[in-house]
View 1: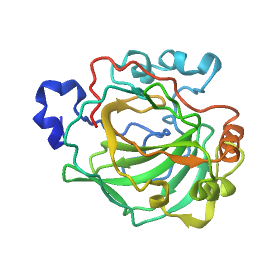
View 2: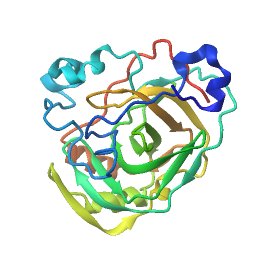
View 3: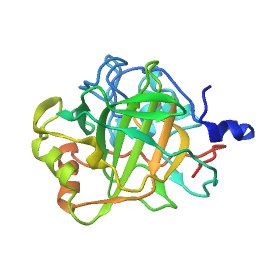
View 4: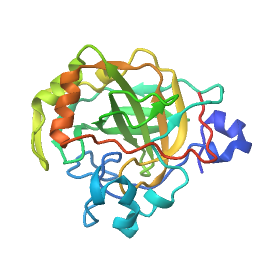
Length: 269
C-alpha cells in the first residue's frame, strides 16, 4: 500500500495510512470510470437502488446488494467525526487546477459538476486528476461533533484508478458565488444534465487556507469501497440558506451519510 511521507515515518500507525482502491463504478465519490469524468449515477450500473432514508437508506445499504457489503462490514468508512487528530508534518497540498467544470448533472443523489481533463492534485509525487465535484447537505464529516451546513467533495483519480477526495466545509452565511452559479444551471429533476453557460473554475471552491486533516476512508455512497485518501480542509467557507434550500429541494431532502465509527484509525493534521 502506498503511503505519504509522514505516514511512512509513522509505520506503527499503519491502520491510519492513506490507502488505495480501484474504481468500481459510478457514484457520488468516484469518477464515472477510470478514463472519463462523465457521471450519470452515483451507484454502479446494474446494482441495487439506494437512497438516504427509508428501507433503502444508509442503515440498510449493506443489505441491498452484495456489492455494497463494505457499507455494513467495512472498518474504515467515511464520513467521520474529526477529533483528537495527531500532529504530524503533513506535506503542503500541490493543487494545479487549470481546467473548468463544463457540465452539471443531477443524478438523483447529488448535484455534480464534471471537470475537463488536465487539473491535478499531487500526493507524494503522484498526480491525481480532478474528475468532478459535488455537494452534500448537511455536511458528511463533522469536526469535534460539529456538523456544517454543506460539504463539497472534489474527487480525483490517478492513472491506476486510486482515489483522493478533497472536502470543503461550509457554514451558513454569505452566498458562495461559485455554488450559486452551479445551482442556477442545475437540472431540477434526476438523471438529467445541463451544459454550464459559463464554465466553473474549481479553484473557486477552495478556501485560501490549505491546512488540512488527512485520514484513510471510503466512498460515502454505495458500494462504500475503502482505501480512499481523504483530505478535509480546515478553513470553512460560507453558503447561504437559499443555496442549502436548493440542494435539499433538488434531492428531496438531505443527502448526507451518517457519521461512521472511527475504529482504529488515526486522523492526522
